[in-house]
Image (tube, rainbow, N blue to C red):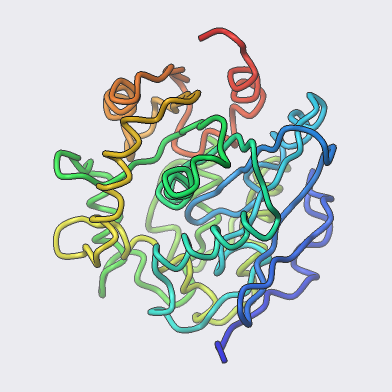
Amino acid sequence: MTDFIRTPEENFADLTNFSFKPRYHQWRDLRMHYIDEGPKAGPVVLLLHGMPTWSFLYRNMIPRLISLGYRCIAPDFIGFGRSDKPTDLHWYSITRHTEILTSFIQELNLSGLLLVCQDWGGPIGLAQAVMMPERFQKLVIMNTWLHHEEYQYSPAIRQWIEGWQPGGIFDTPTPDLALMLVMSSGHMKYDWSAISDGKRRRFTNEAEEIYRGFSAPYRGLPADGYNGMRRFPLSIPYGKYDDGAGTQQALHYRLLKDWNKDCQFIWGCADDIFVESWGRAWAKTMNARFDALADADHFLQLTHSEKIVELMCDART
């Protein structure tokens, strides 16, 4: 049996713009939460989050997509959101996240998928398109990456990795990671020390809604409840931190060069993690359309949801 923590349901009460019915996919002895909204016969959009977010990240995009006739499915990776949170740090791996998402797609028998992926949703979601291309019709790739030999990790990524090592700035039992989303949305100046200083901030109403939503999954949990988020930075295949995930990602990167269906890159160009030049270069290798959002940061879904949907549904090529 897997030892895990389940976030109390009351943590998710009264979240702004997030009244979607919770649904669950059973994987072995763990429960993975997902949203499934919109017309059942409509084209399916699979919305994948990264770190330290959950399906709440797409709360403003989902209603817009539903109004256009799409069925929206947004899972929370195990360790995130409403999903169960194994307490063993070493339980988590990119291979396991990928396996669980595969089982989810197969159990729901999803096909004709429009994949929307960002951050860690990229490596995990694009693996599905490589392994099951017959189930996917279009890829929308936003501020993410796939490791390969030529990839140049930005200074921001390297600092992020080091910050999670023993003694690093984020190496604390209960890092307040929702502050990242407040910062990325422009409601707070970037101050990485704030994540671990334990102080409670006062926010405007909009910032408080963001903070409350992204802190809901871990609010009141012990340190082991943070391990899903804690493990992702340690899984970035950079230098000595490569646990083998990089080899798989490099294979997927090569295979996606032959992707012969629709593909679109929508990029937050103010992101210092996955920079604009990388996004443009990757899009070129896939002969894909590249839409630049000049003032969007890493979590572009927070600030540019309406524009993202507009670009996704724009018929021009």
